[in-house]
Amino acid sequence: MMKTQIAAVALAMALGAGAMPAHADSHDTNMNFEMIFKMADKNKNSMVSRQEFLDAMGRAYDMGMKKMKGDSMMVKGSEMTRDGLKALIADIYRGA
Image 1 (cartoon, rainbow, N blue to C red):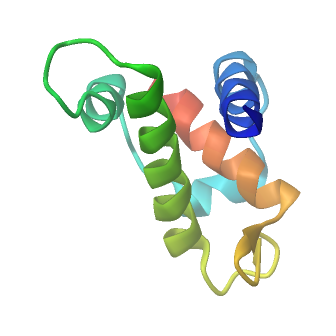
Image 2: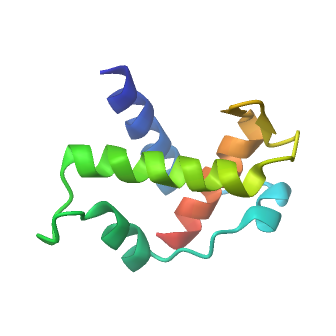
């Protein structure tokens, strides 16, 4: 249940985010909506289930962590900082 709430908050933030952090540009994924949708729609039925959404957000998080590795402003150990998560959400939002 907590993962669902976190994912829902992340999506809401991504869809409603107006300001992008200055640091986000150096980690831009250049994803568009079609890429995001295809990444989520694993069974290719042109719909995204809750589980597909959660899996896609997990993959987006992992991709962001990989790109931000070594940047202490964005990642500390195995966790994203506030700035890191904000940059990831900004990247997803730009793609939508």
